[in-house]
Length: 221
Ligand code: JB2
Image (spheres, rainbow, N blue to C red):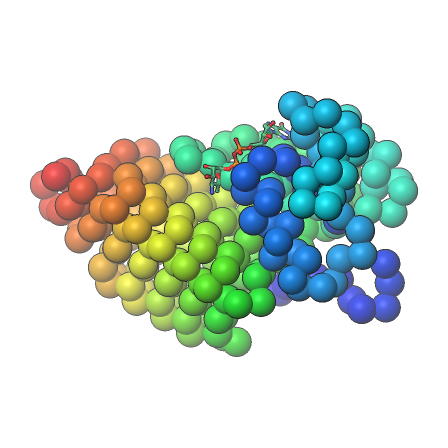
């Protein structure tokens, strides 16, 4: 499932978005030791600027030319603190240009051999992903998150730093689970949900909800 580079040929990667999340991804990508060249596109950072040793090549208008030059891999490094629609829009555009999306997984992460990770997903430092978990495309599983056995995470969902999903939790597409949240076992969180930082999710959450604190059957704090 992991769409990652073979050792034999030059692996060139474009990161889309040069802010804070990009730095986390660069650090992990370098530690993976499988990309020979990494550049960045960003409309708000001057061309030629270096970010952790990687050059800003220009705006997203460069993506077509970079692909022609041999950049085969791309990765959306715009994080988010809300619903991830911009990430989705950019991923569609970049896929149409012919790029392949790798999984970028920091070597410190512990990922079960029976877990399935979708293309374009980031797995940060000290993440644990346990047996038979499925994670969709273009997700962010950020530093120190624990995703227990048999969880299911949709596409473009962001599990923020230090979050714990207990066993058999489902989190659907385009969700943002805030830092330090715990979701107890067998809970279903529907699509487009935002859960505030440090919450405890004890009941299922309907789609398009924003919730925080102790999320119980009364739907709130
Ligand atoms: O359309 C775009 C675009 N829109 C914004 N194309 C490209 N190539 N880049 C775009 N950007 C760029 O994304 C902005 O110009 C900016 O440089 C970058 C976003 O950086 P920022 O540091 O504001 O946020 P972030 O998304 O890298 O990080 C957030 O998400 C992470 C997961 C923060 O909340 C972090 O604290 C968090 N860890």
